[in-house]
Amino acid sequence: GQQVMQIPQYQHVQEGEDFTTYCNSSTTLSNIQWYKQRPGGHPVFLIQLVKSGEVKKQKRLTFQFGEAKKNSSLHITATQTTDVGTYFCAGRNNDMRFGAGTRLTVKP
Amino acid sequence: DAGVTQSPTHLIKTRGQQVTLRCSPKSGHDTVSWYQQALGQGPQFIFQYYEEEERQRGNFPDRFSGHQFPNYSSELNVNALLLGDSALYLCASSLMGANTGELFFGEGSRLTVL
Image 1 (cartoon, rainbow over the protein chains, first blue to last red):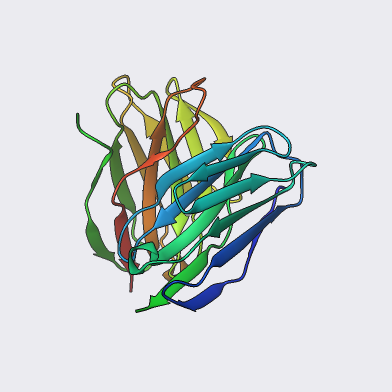
Image 2 (image 1 turned 60 degrees about the vertical axis):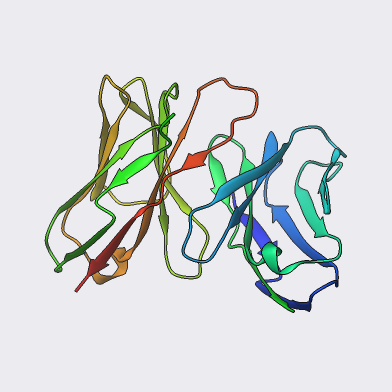
């Protein structure tokens, strides 16, 4: 069945450093979504990518969808303490499958 | 505009018992998906309901069942609880056929099985 793998599992950065999380699917996806979950909270939608090779930006966040529509990445430039949380990718084939997430901690 | 609401927020059960969790989707949404999130893990897809029918199902045993009502609200039932069923159960609502396909999550129901 469809599997979505995400790395790294944890990332600890100094405030101002960049951060990247990577997502890989065992199958070709129709689209991929990214969510952020703050500690003790629930996942909140960030963005959806649909097209092969698509790149979208939201302020300091850059999202990419691979050419083969099997991988994706999220890059945060100059992290801030407000970026703390777990970032999940979720790939859609028939249903929406989530990766295990990358937990980001930021040291002020 | 109410978002996704889930109840109860916390509950404790013992092995072998049964539990029912409830979800009201965001206003205007017609599809409800249920996820199980163990501590430190990503949400695992249980099943999705649309038009009062189970449309898709993840790798969960038959002990996990659900229902969707005409008002689009949904229930998740788990029978014969095991210790490993302890988790945060998330309900996510969406609108079938919408371009974004964005899932709106509730705050979850945290189940502890002793």
